[in-house]
Image (cartoon, rainbow, N blue to C red):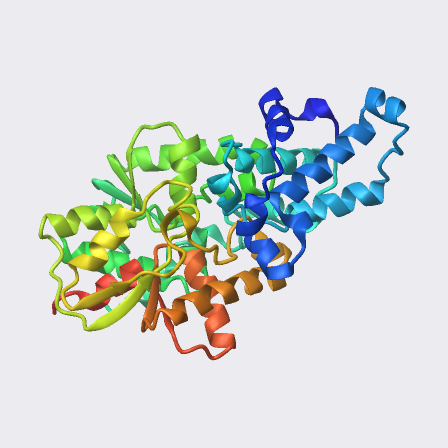
Length: 395
């Protein structure tokens, strides 16, 4: 690990830090562990110290001991104990691009072999099976068969106006499969001309970037773009905010991209979604990648307010200041205990609103919050927006 491993802009960012500690106050990992070294400030200080002790001039002038392999490994492990939620960057008064710094740091840790070993599992799974769970990619759309009335074509047409890009979590994790089922039923009720890619869909590549394995991303981009183009589609819809974000930021802009909440907003506004009254009080959780990452705050709330009889109450932390559920940055795989502690704080805030359900727009958020609520017998329902709209469909 050396100074030259980081772009000049990243090194200037670290030098500019004013140590105001605002990032410490909002870091969900710090709130869960009381370990300040996991904050942006703590991580930058740790990195600066390591780089100085590796740099020849600084080390000689200040007579600093060179960092041991054990110290670098320990620092590397702490860097990956982060959900990449972006809260630190959101509050930074100097506008330091902290998420980019963390991603650059993860890439360098992988390059030098100082990453947690589980990171290699992500690479292996994606190289071998093209999904993060190492499942048979030919079974990516098998959830369609579990629907009450599955169509003969399995929602896989030769051509369509819209491609619904399911994502790995929605395709394979049983709890999350309810989300693509709900969206497909809404699309049917709204006469949307759509198709799935099925086995031709590969992971979007977001897990590679978050793991510091971004060099493998181009292969996944090229494959997925070709698969969508082969359908003749103009639009791509995602229920996963991470898929939506990586397509917006890294893929060639050949198609119109919509998160499902945005697409549903347009359908509802056009009167294409037949909504019946739903007497419920709900609160809304902004997923990190959709909210802070893509700045999509209003669309989900517009859909909720369009459902007759529904009451929306906001949590104390909402929109760009929403608390992370603990499900991002590959954290659940690397430190399940920390991920659960973040989910606990999130669920407790939702319960405090008095709402019957917490609604979100992310498969991973549904997973983490539902898992915590069920294990701890917390009396609140966790739903994706698509599931709630499906429940409100007239007839």
